[in-house]
Image 1 (cartoon, rainbow, N blue to C red):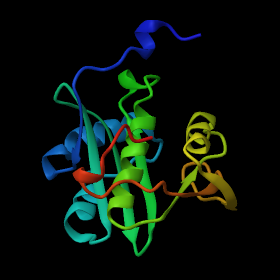
Image 2 (image 1 turned 30 degrees about the vertical axis):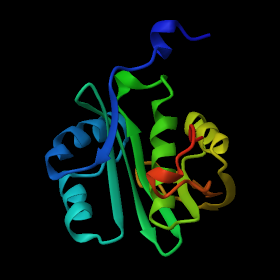
Image 3 (image 1 turned 45 degrees about the vertical axis):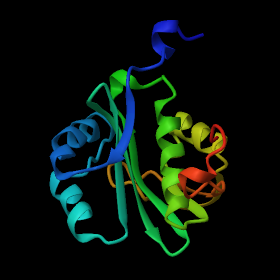
Image 4 (image 1 turned 30 degrees about the horizontal axis):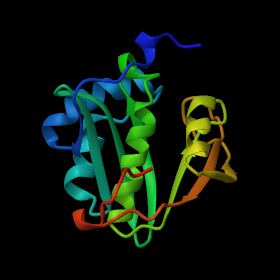
Amino acid sequence: MESSEHTEAPGSLEFRSMTMEDIPAICEIEQEAFTTPWTAGAFQNELTSNQFARYMVMEIDGEVAGYGGMWLIMEEAHVTNVAVLKKYRGKKLGERLMRELQKTASFFGAVRMTLEVRPSNYVARGLYEKLGFYSVGVRRGYYTDNREDAVIMWADLPKYPHNLNELTGDLP
């Protein structure tokens, strides 16, 4: 059982588009979260040169606490990366971030979402399954640090309202 300290709600929570000014904080989260983190240059390229890319940050009391990115191509969204700062993990913020990515993808016309996840990342896989993702295959030797396979997962996106007049209650 988790302590109440571990699961208490954060302060002021806000989701917004990632900017170039966010990249240093994003790179710190990358270093903490991944064995093969993306570089600042990779994020700069995504923000300036990739017309399909959509990246968002999650702020808590003005601090970048997490981020997520995806490529939106036609009616599909491909999640590129999602991470939460270590001190904020275990508070359901990864779920909130993924739900925000799903809403954003739906807003931009996507009806399905895909991602890859390490088979050994049980926490992430459990979250993705909770959000409706299911396994459809494996990419052999996908991860370059240890040649671990990747589980390919897909989900049909919930239908979210596309304007404020359609909001009638809490979204899932």
